[in-house]
Length: 213
Ligand SMILES: CC(C)(COP(=O)(O)OP(=O)(O)OC[C@H]1O[C@@H](n2cnc3c(N)ncnc32)[C@H](O)[C@@H]1OP(=O)(O)O)[C@@H](O)C(=O)NCCC(=O)NCCS
Image 1 (cartoon, rainbow, N blue to C red):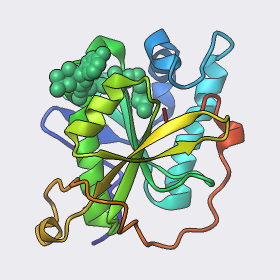
Image 2 (cartoon, rainbow, N blue to C red):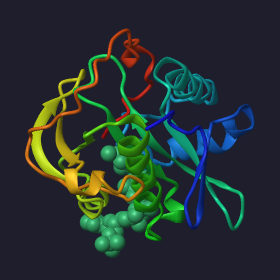
Image 3 (tube, protein in one colour):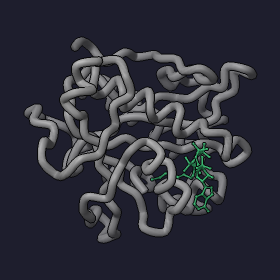
């Protein structure tokens, strides 16, 4: 076990911290209609809002020591998405979430990036359970969770009164012995991550559009 790394790499992707120069690409990512619809982002969402959102992602890393990565495609160096752990105040558990630019959908990038962030969550943070919160109509996202080994465990009503399916990934003890392997083995609801957490900011007010579904 150790610190959660601030950069990581998969076969086709680089996972890294967001930086100021991402602003245009990040604005474009969030305002793509097929992305925006899942995050309560509408036509009033501006580049300024995207900057504030990006700053919130960076701040989450300082507060928790882990957070969401910017996802670059190795082949082009382009920012194509955002993936990783998320745990604002009031969240039911540490969540793994994903967004990929629609021009890059269907290549397995969300699954590839998320698998690495889950692996790191289990191996580096000592977590035994991680969730994803997914809107019941979001079949693509649900498929990613399933491919990662997630299983529906419950539902959760978010701060806006919307229901999310709670997919759970649990670290099996046998796989834990081989830390470093992807081990998103869904089990039952037992074995929630037991790490005490306190002092998180309530980020919902700053979230222009929620951040889970
Ligand atoms: C969800 C999202 C991240 C997936 O990105 P991606 O890189 O295309 O994902 P992957 O390629 O790893 O996997 C997508 C899977 O969904 C499947 N899929 C595509 N369209 C689908 C549909 N309408 N219904 C069900 N499954 C679908 C794909 O076939 C693939 O599964 P497969 O590998 O078994 O064929 C992307 O669609 C996205 O950014 N959506 C908008 C934002 C969002 O919803 N984020 C999640 C909030 S919880």
